[in-house]
Length: 130
Image 1 (cartoon, rainbow, N blue to C red):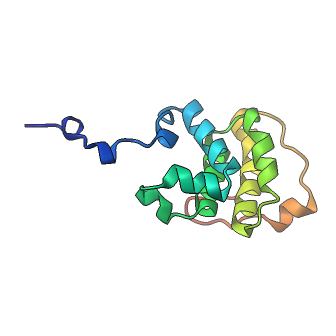
Image 2: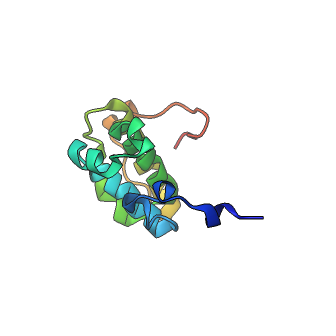
C-alpha cells in the first residue's frame, strides 16, 4: 500500500509562497506577506495555481483573521495598515484582529476609536465578537 506522500506529483507540491508556513511563525509571516502584496506580486505568486481563483483581497481578509487568532505584537503594524485598505471587508477584519490581538498576546487593549466602532464585525460563525 502506498501513502499519498509517496505519490506526490510536482504540480501538487507546495508553492514557494507557502513552503515555510508549517508553524505559527511561518503562518504569521505568510499572513503578513499576503497583507503586504500588491496585485502584480499576487499574480506572480499564484501563476499556474488554483489559488489564483481567490482574489487578493479575499486572502487578505483571511490573513487578518489568522493574525487575530495567532498574531503577536510584531503583527500590529501590518494590521494597522490594513485599516486603510480599499475593501471594507478587509478593513473590518483588520479592526477585528486589532481588537482581539491584545487578548491573544496578553497586552492591555488599545483605546477604541469611533472608526473601530464603525467597523465592528457582527457576531457570526467563525468570527466571535471582540
